[in-house]
Length: 114
Length: 113
Image (tube, rainbow over all chains, first blue to last red; front, side):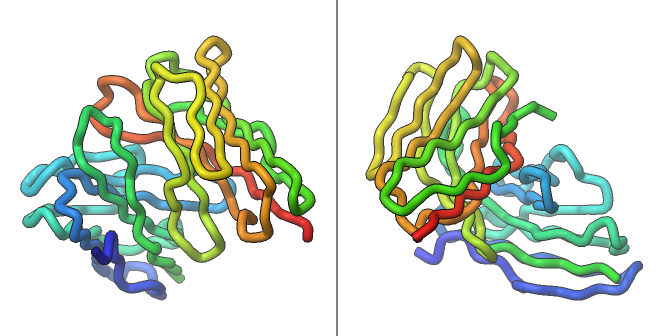
């Protein structure tokens, strides 16, 4: 298994540009999520999904959209990038079993918005 | 969001010594906890987990202790090695909140050879 994969590894955007961060998992996990990680702060949940066709907002959803058309893929879209979105983004997945299942993380995407 | 905090932002230990990393949480409904290790430039990696019906759980060189009375969680690493140098996060899942985990800010562990 490849586990959780993310592309690209690094991206530079100008303010106002759009882009999609890709995330895929091959473990047939129902639950997938996106986090951002900023210096001095813990991982903060952006959006999550409990299955294909179902998405929901996390702690910091503003400025981001997601979709879940398949079990494997969970892309994160920035429609109009802002410098405040400069961060490291992690995708994670896990099975659904009453919440007590560990999450597996991807390697991250480092985003710089100028 | 939930308050999941770590007592010390940095910790330095001698190689071969034991390390203890602490984590406090504020919600008594938290029922599942995970410790993650994050090396520079990489994603968080699962170390060990514990459910709220347990006080202690052991893995290979690692032990997690849970004290629900004071809402405190600790990670003990035995015979710390240079490869253990990383940032360690605790994360909690709160019963009946959907499926969200809340993360602490992390403790940076440095192992001195």
